[in-house]
Image (cartoon, rainbow, N blue to C red; front, side, top):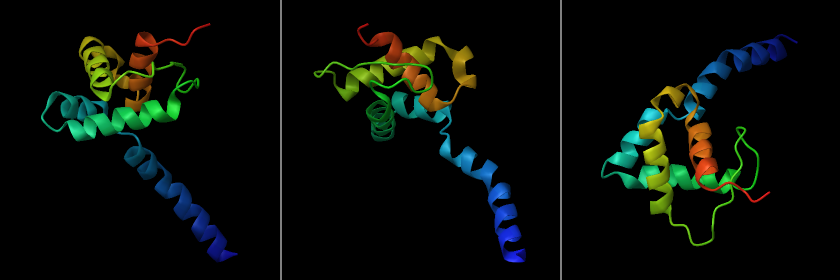
Length: 108
């Protein structure tokens, strides 16, 4: 019983750390996209778009054209982030989804 209680307490104490680590800061994504370190930028944007495309995640839904390149996605996201600093209160994945949702809304 004591062991179960200790594990439960440990789990709840580590939850804020796990959430903080899991959510990438949008400033880091923007910095990577605007620097020569495009691998991090491309990887993050591609991972978010692959996971969320065609689904209504974070309240935004989008359908990417087959011929869109990761460089185009980078430009869309970077331009969006530079124009919407007030939205930085949202998480990084939400902002990527929002940018792509505005650029590539799914047909109704």
